[in-house]
Image 1 (cartoon, protein in one colour):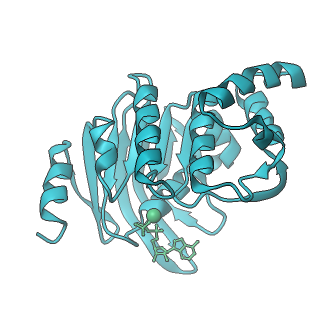
Image 2 (spheres, helix red, strand yellow; image 1 turned 135 degrees about the horizontal axis):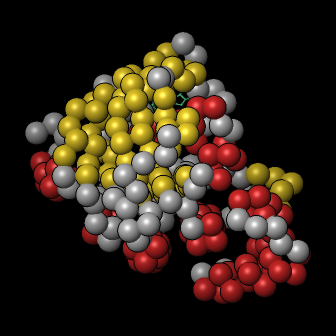
Length: 238
Ligand SMILES: Nc1ncnc2c1ncn2[C@@H]1O[C@H](COP(=O)(O)OP(=O)(O)OP(=O)(O)O)[C@@H](O)[C@H]1O
Ligand SMILES: [Mg+2]
């Protein structure tokens, strides 16, 4: 279980999140809803670690291990994965090197050839050219290509807690459908999706067990998936 207790986060002496408590059980899917600028991405980033965020919390635990003591790579090793709202570019790091490093450090050590054999079929499956392996990570990649690479990492690493921060951003309608189908295929009772969205369409593909609604940085409603439908039809204000 991924458990957040009384989480407060500030940036540059301004409070972004205040007193958030929630639990995410493995095998259940969650949806986080609220307005632009309410702190959803900050919550996602805090779970993975962010250099600018000053975290004041009793604890964030995953199966009783305190995440706040761990660097982001160690958190990733505990099988938390974040699909970014704004996917960063990292010049000078080749995609192949990045993926191999991540795989070797979290699953098992491979030789160059072993990893090549492992990764190339996933590239074919995602209809990504193998030339991408030798390009700088995400640099000049289209939004669709960046998203495909996130799916590729999910397939490669098989994380348990998968945070999707507005997975629909960067994608046109057709590309979104393909991504949504892929995510649906990845959803099992051995993982949990934590979905941050404004668009709701993703919820047609991944069934939600619980919805959390934030207001003024606090969770104001925590209910079953029906609330997502209610907000979709009646908006937040109503
Ligand atoms: N690194 C940062 N430095 C300064 N301010 C930040 C930083 N990260 C977030 N904030 C501020 O915290 C607030 C919450 O931002 P956040 O991106 O978490 O909102 P959000 O709910 O994800 O919004 P959206 O729905 O538009 O993606 C905003 O006012 C934002 O400007
Ligand atoms: Mg956001």
